[in-house]
Each structure stands twice: as C-alpha cells, then as structure tokens.
Image 1 (cartoon, rainbow, N blue to C red):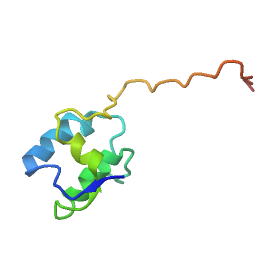
Image 2 (cartoon, rainbow, N blue to C red):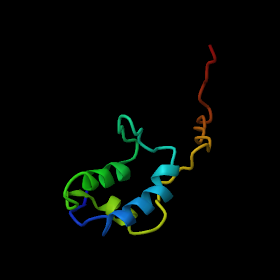
Image 3 (cartoon, helix red, strand yellow):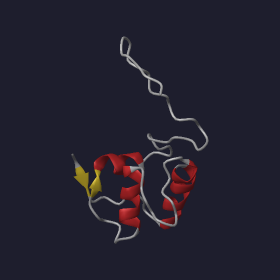
Image 4 (cartoon, rainbow, N blue to C red):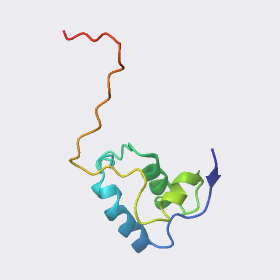
Length: 94
C-alpha cells in the first residue's frame, strides 16, 4: 500500500470546506463524541489535522482530498445496499 506525507490540505479553511461537503454529510461519519472512524479517508484526514500536517497517510486518502467530491461518499439517510443472496443457496428463516 502506497503511503505519503504530503498534506491533504494547504490550510484550515480548505480542510473545513472539504469536510463539510463530504464527511459531515456521509453516513460513515465518525461520531464527534468518540471519534470512532468508519472511513479510512476520514481517519487519515484527522491524523494529519491533529498532528503537524505531514504525518504519513495512505496515498488513496491524499488523492481523494485533491478532488471536491469524496470517492467513498455515502449520503446520510440513503439505505445501505442489500446483499444479494447467491442463486441456488438454501436460506432459512427462523
């Protein structure tokens, strides 16, 4: 897995704008009280935000933040995709 120390954002305003547009509206958003992350991109962003800004993160996270829309965005309130049952497999309802 490729890693980088490039900062995701050049300043706090850019960070805040990206987070409001993506993470704050995503159903995988971390709980503000516990900061339990359900998204690796958000975890990497916070790693740099809470440090010096040049901590090592995944290259994928850095590249995601270089665009206005997150590639892993899942809107809040949207139902999760249902898993399709494999054909020919028995299912039991108890």
